[in-house]
Length: 382
Image 1 (tube, rainbow, N blue to C red):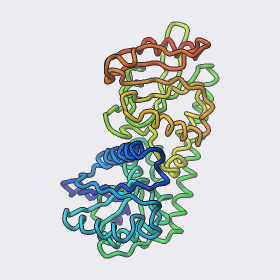
Image 2 (image 1 turned 90 degrees about the vertical axis):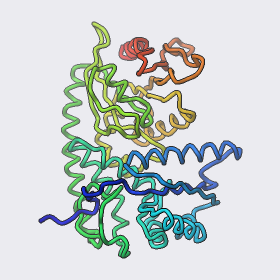
Image 3 (image 1 turned 60 degrees about the vertical axis):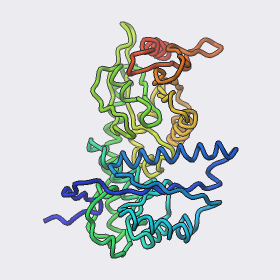
Image 4 (image 1 turned 135 degrees about the vertical axis):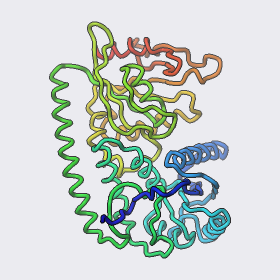
């Protein structure tokens, strides 16, 4: 009989975990006028709420706090931690999610005070990836990222945590006990890296075969839920999962796209990015993200109806720089223009002073501007 794993989900659970979201506004994270800082903080909090729902949690409470800097031991400070503990007791909270990255010490101390499980933003995103990974490669990548994240969070020893009944962040790679020797984790990480290295070699072989055919490669990139998979499906008539939720699809998919009688390209759909995408995840998905770095053109899909779309574009470009893809030419695709008032972004191609296509306004759901996008892609392919 196999032993339970550290992330194992109990299938007997009939209802989602009751989750409280804790958002802390640190002075160093937000600059500018007070109103703009509040708006940016609220946007980050709304995104965190969507992440909780994407992980399958029942968000029953949201608590906020302001600090100049994080408390060394408890992140929020002793007084606020006691307030949160009282809220946990009153509302039967099972999991507290912090919309920030916590140190292992802060996470353990908070669990001791709150008397429930604590998950930080990194752990929450990893939990979603563990839930959504479908391919063997995707599962390997998520497992590597989770184990890397957990290597410093193994020793807990609190009575309320010793019975693992499952929940968000408890699905994925295997380990036997909370007291597991970190050496075993490191051995598993080494083995996973070897497996992913083999995957990377196979991917390189397939890419070499494509390049020998002199076919340009276009990679779809963008913030999660910007509409990349929907656009991919509409252009290639594929059936990639496309839902109105964060990280609906993780696995890279490639299709040949015929633009006209003379031009065809390879179009790849990649994982969506998000603010503060965990470095462990970027590292684990290096084999997949390499497709982005080696593309000829990036189609940067943007949710033009999102109130903070410019910041989302900056976040995507920051990740692209991290993976070495910042110098790949971009064609920006402003999607969801049908949700904008008064025809604010009419469908069509936007050109620079030299007449080059630099962006296209489209609506995938309303089938607006897609012919213009194909024309712009033909220009870039040639």
